[in-house]
Every structure is written in structure tokens, then in C-alpha cells.
Image (cartoon, rainbow, N blue to C red; front, side):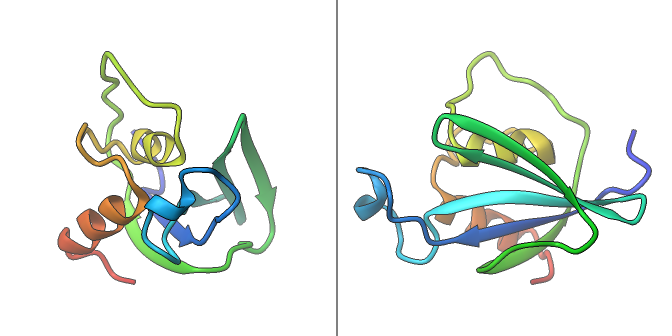
Length: 114
């Protein structure tokens, strides 16, 4: 389905929300960077907006996990969070992964390189 299945998930700190104190420090937000035709496409869910940016160099700060995208299977229900959007782009259908730290640990357990 994809010409290039590679994707990079970036985990970073975001203390600007009321729920941020309940999340693990330094892993409170996540987004996906995908290489495509010599460009880097960033897919990011920020509060009320969904941002897609194409750049010649990847722009990020934080922990990065390299992974592969799989065929997307849409579920009946999805939370409108950075984790849910990241999982959907990657094709991960795990409904109980709801925090950035849970997603980070899941990707690390899948023997992905960092």
C-alpha cells in the first residue's frame, strides 16, 4: 500500500494542558514524521488543530522511535488525541494505548530502533 513504509514517531514534553501533570514527564505529546519523495511530512494533532507540514529537513525535539506503517484499519471509536491520530497513521489498532508513554513503550517492545 505504501511505497515507503518508514515512519518516525517523536515523543516530547508538552505541559500546556490541564491533563499534562497526569502524564509522564518528557513524554506528554507525540506526532509522526514520514519521509516522502525527498521531503519530510509531519502529521501532528495539536489541541483543536491537526497540522500537516512538508519540509526538506525533519523538525523535532525529543525522543524518536523509527517504525513502519501498516495498513490502516479504522475502528468504530477514536479519541481525538495526539496518540489516537498517531496510531491511526501507523495502522496500530490497540484501543487501550491512550497515553504517549504507553505508545512509546509499545513501539519499543516491538523491537523498533530508536
